[in-house]
Image (cartoon, rainbow, N blue to C red; front, side):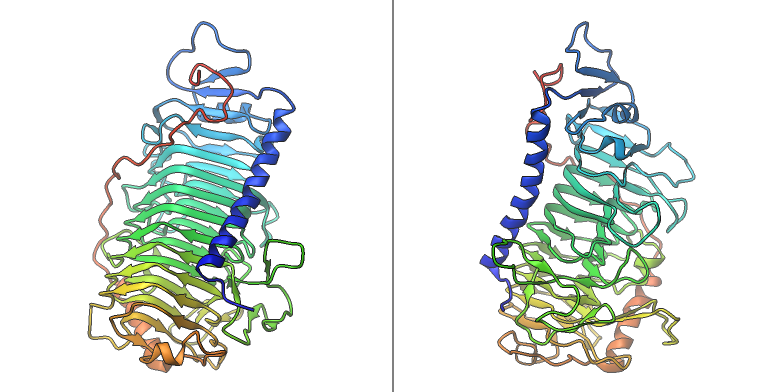
Length: 510
C-alpha cells in the first residue's frame, strides 16, 4: 500500500476525468443517433422571421427549461438580466442550460421575494444537468441561516428525506455567483449527488461557503480552476469523501479557506472519509472504504487506520490558499462558530491528502486539524447522538507555507497544527507530515519527526485541554466579530470561449 503522491494523484485525476468524460460521451452518442435535438432560446428580443423548426423562443428561462425534455436539449440564454427562480426537474434530465456570455447573462434575485427564501437555479433530484457560462446573484435567505439563499444548487436529496445520494451527474462550467447583501448562503452548491465537475467557477459574498459539496460518501468529483474569495468559507464539504479532487484553484481572502468536514446530523451520513482501497485487478478506479478492510476496521462509522501508508482519494492539490482571516465578512451562526483565520481546516477528517499547495499569510494556522465531536457543546455535556469524529489518516505533503500564525500570543498558531486525544478517544493516529516548507511554528513542535511520513505509524498528536481552549478561543473571537460588511460585485470573469460548441445550428450559433 502507498500514499498517492504527485504522479499518482495525476493518474487518479485523469482516470476520474476519463470516467466522467465517458459518461458525457455516451450521452452524446446516444442522442446523436436520435437526430437533432431541440434548441430553446431565451431572450428579450423578438425572434427572427424564419428559423429552424427545432428552435423555439421564450422570454423566461423557466419556460425554456420546462420545454427541454430530451437529453442534450439546449437552453441558450441571450445576454440580459432575468428576474426569476428556475427549477430543473426529472423530466429535464440530460439538458444543457448555457448563457451566451458569462458576465452579461445574469439571473438576479434582488427583487424576488424581498424577504428572502428563494434559490437561483435549483436542480431537483435530476440526473446529468449542465449549467454553464452565466452569473447568478443576490438570491438570499430569509434570515442568516434560513431557507433559500443558494445561487446554483444541484439538490439530489430524495423526496423521502433519507440520507443518501438521490441523483448523479452535476456539471458546472464558467459560472459566477455572488451576493452583495448579508444573507446569501451558498454560491455554487451540490448535495446528495454523485459524479460531477466544476471548472472555472467564481463565488464571493456568502455567509456560509462560496462552494459546497456535501452528503456523498463516494463523490467522484473534480473541482478545478475555482476562485473563491470574500466568503465565510471558500470551500466546505460535509461528509463528502471518496474520489474528490480540488486542484489549481484559489481560496483567498475568506474568513477560512478550505474546510472538508465530518458533520452530524447535517448532510449525512458521517464521516468525511477521503481514504480508498487499491483498485481491484482489471479495474482502474480505486474503491471507497466501507466495512472491514485491509487498512483497518470501520468501527461505528468511524475509520481506524493501522498505518500511515494508505491510499488517498480526496486530494487538495496545487491550490493557492492565502490571506484567509477577514472577520468583517458575512457569517451565519454555523460559520461564525468555527475557528477562523485558517488556510485548510480539517475538523474530524479521515484520509485526506493536502498536496503541493501554497498556504500563506493565514493569521491563525496554515493547516489546522482537530477532533470534532458533533453536535458539540462547549460545556462538554454532549447531547445524545453525538458523533466523536477523530482526525486520522490525513497526509500533508509538499506544501509551501509562510507567514502563518501572525496574530501571535497563542500557543498553537503557525503553519501546521494537529490535535487529538480528547474526549476519552485515542484514535486520531497515523496522520503524517512530509516535505513541506514550514518557516513558522508547528504543533507538535517536532512535527516532521513525531508525525513524519517516513514513519510506518504515528501517534495521537495530543494537545489536551490547552488545545481545546485554543479552539474555543478562536470560536469566541469569530462569534464576537465586528458588524459584517457587504461585499461588492466581482470584476468580469473569463467567459466560455465558444458557447455554441456542440449546439445544433440556430440564429445564435450559425
